[in-house]
Amino acid sequence: MSYGDELDSESAELVRPYVITKGRGLPDEEQLSLITLVTAADDDQRRPTRLSPEEQNLLDLCGAGYLSVAEIAGHTRLPLGVVKILLSSLTESGHLVTRPPVARAALADRQILEEVLNGLRAKFG
Amino acid sequence: MTEYIQNPVLWALLVVILVAIALIVRQRRAARALRQEMDGLRAHYSELENQYSQSVQAAQEQAEEATKTVLKSAMRTLQGLAAEQQLVVSRLQNKYGESVILQDLLEIDHTNSQFGRRAQSIAVLCDGWLGRQRDIASVYDVVRSAQGRIRHYRRVEILSQVDFGITSRAVEPVALALAELLDNATSYSSPDTVVEINIRTVPKGICIVVDDAGVGMNDEERAKAERLLSSDRVTGVSGLGNPPQFGFAVIGVLAERFGFEVAVDSSSPYGGVRAVVLLPHDLLTGMPERKAPAASKTASKAAAEAMPGVGGPEPTLAASSTSDGLPKRRRKRPMAIVPGSASVTRSASRSGAETAAIMGAFQRGTQSGRATQADPADQTSSTRGADSEGHEYS
Image (cartoon, rainbow over all chains, first blue to last red):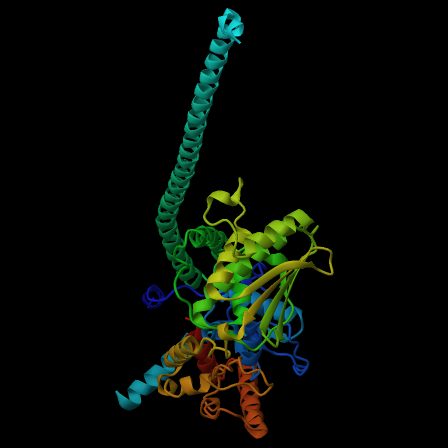
């Protein structure tokens, strides 16, 4: 990763990740996987002031629609597990709603693909 | 008369008197000489005593100085190692962020932070190196940094925030002083109580109030603490007792050197100690452009990974503030699942119609995703959905 080079030239983050998570443990994989979709709850207006800047940031991110956990982590500078912990605590407090990922479509039928390939070859090849 | 002269007794008496006079004179002279000698000796003695105490003091100072120098360079090495290890741990946390190892890495990070703080405290007492200069940070982040440097950080709760930053030169000293206060607060209160931090704006600057629910200090302890916090404390490391109590001495040195005030003379409403750190205006500054370079870097990096075309305008977007009156929060660019939203998010402030359009687009996108789930024959959209998902996190 190119991250290492950047970190060498600067000091580590002032606020350590375990403070950001307040020492909470990682959530279950079933509860929050990489492709679980997350969005802000409808009654987002009652945003409390006791949230940390990172949590506020996550709420802002999720405000626009469903995002996957992996995408959210990509937008923060935090380790993925830390983002997961924050997301699960925000979900527990009712600020966020999660939805299991959309299941992948069944694999395409090999026979159809071969027919398409043959057709394309017949037409262009 | 002659008979008197003839009288040998008279002569004898005369001789005796003369002898007595001579004796007295001699004694007097001897006594005077003795007295002078004694005075001289006394003067000499006090001179010697002075010289002795002076040389003892000099030796003491020299020894103290030598200890300080040795400790200073030793601590400098330890501090450097702790900082290096912190970077390594940070890198590992980013690398293995998605695995269960993260939990252990966070614990290592916590231990390492405490280790670094100890070394820093000793270095401060030896007039040593405080650590690398930090960027301007918000008061809230400095408090959280302090929180992370103590063992029982989970028991600390920050109840209020202010929109102020701390100048870069004061970030580390304030964090260290506050960490020592929090260490005292958590060590001298029972493990099931909470240590509360309130940050308040006052006319002279900002107050960080630390309340614990411990047993408090008696008069003697309070006097000792105040002496350590004031400028006439014992300098150096030798007067700290065994086991050494660094806390107040470190805070005192830092407060004096960097110009903030710390008071522990009041009681908290929970029965323990209330410690108040007063940061004057010249240590304060506006809210930092919080992680702005970092955020724009990550955002543009992520954007470049996601879609190479839109990496450019992101930094300007990262500097905008949200609509709910919190200038420090940065709205990151929402990830464009549906291509149409990318252009919309370039405008810093979004109208209701645009938001509605985005939401509509999202809804269409998710609906099409659900539709393909129900109907696997619709291959084009389903594979596209799977592709974009796979693309974002791999």
